[in-house]
Amino acid sequence: MYNNPEAERRFKFPSYINPRENLKGFVVSIAIFIAVLGAGAYTVTNTNNNSGDNGNQNPSAFIPLANKTVVYGYWTDKNSFIEAVDLQSGSIYSLATLDLNIKKVIPISPDSIIFINKIDAMDYGKEISIFYYASKVISPIISAAEGYGIDDYVISPNKKYLATWEISVPENSQGLIGGASRVYTVDLINPQRKNLIYDEPIGRGLFIHYPLAILDNGELYLDKFEPNNGAGWANGVSVSDFLGSVSSKKDISLMSAGTFAT
Image (cartoon, rainbow, N blue to C red; front, side):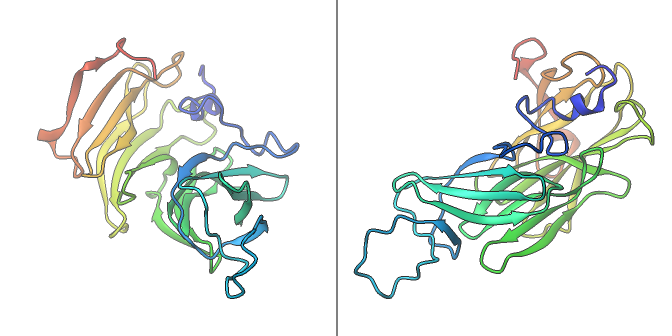
């Protein structure tokens, strides 16, 4: 964390592995999520179909046998691969083959995923995009603010609301000091509108907010982070409504600095 931007970018994800630094083998490190997936039109890479008597069944359809499916990702030296495992049959299905410059992939429906796209050398993305399995189309849904890059995001359990953490850093910076931090909330029904919750300078001894979770009602929970200072995070949880109104913003006294670690 000491003037180390790479470490600062990883502070929330201790197991995060940068594909630009780890191109050997298959690295299961984009994300692992448990998702309830319906019968979407996915491409099958390995099936274990024992029905045999349904001649009308599309052999390329993903029809999970278990209630839960594990969706995971890995990198090679050329692409990012997103796959799913049916927990009952053990069948593996290919959901997407994407570029290397992506991170934080989350399934949001039976037929689509979202992710931070167009990652730069500082590991900040230009946009959050959605990928549709059947059409293999990638569409941007949220753009970073001018001069900023998306470092992280959280999404509500009902996949309706999203909060982004966006960073602007000075050119040739050895850390975040001298930059700026913003937190936005977005309703995915109208993703063009972004609500600015926090707009904070990044300086020594100053705390900046970053999103921890957003609920199904749009209520946002945030932690505070002190850049370039040891661990930096877990400096107190606060809450805000979806629009960031001043009256709604408050610190949670039972989760002040020193009462939790992660």
